Image 1 (tube, one colour):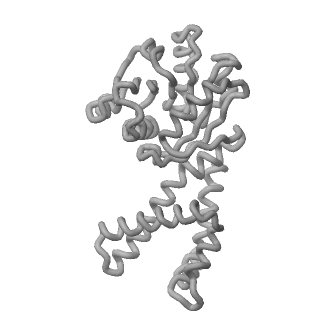
Image 2 (spheres, one colour):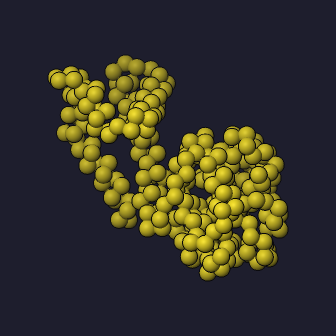
Length: 260
């Protein structure tokens, strides 16, 4: 598979790293146009993908990703669509700010163009990506889109009205978990644990707890109840979290983003 991508910022570089890490896509088969800040050039030196400034090079790929800022999506799409000149190479935008319908005003309603919302764990092939397909899309084009994204982790079809909340939960959520893990480690360091060990234990605990939830299908509350014995240390810790408004702070973080 040959993949073209515009943009090598945080999300673009995460996707590039994921494709290469998977071993499914050879580095030279990833064609990147990376803007003017030099980020793509620096990344190319370590990852060895193909860097280009020629839009015509994207005619040779199987799928194209737009991983640029929202204001750049439509101008790039317009130039790209003109260059493709009748070719129907699937295009996926990873910007939440431009809808499929807006992009179809440039490409036409029958063009295979979609909107996807990945998160940064795609760089280790454990991402969670939501995708909005156009109303009209062939099985072959949808299969190409799916293959390129399932390499990076789990793919979930969502409706356009859920893009905002999906992006908030899946995209912003990792930062919340990072803050939680850092706080757990700080608490452990306060009580005598080595810093590196504390980070490792906190990260492994969060990872394994999440995997337990996914593999058992149990409600989070049920899993919590399973480790909170009467009068025990865990329920005392949970009570301290509740006293400090842990649940409300988490809910409010999601709600604040959605209202911003």
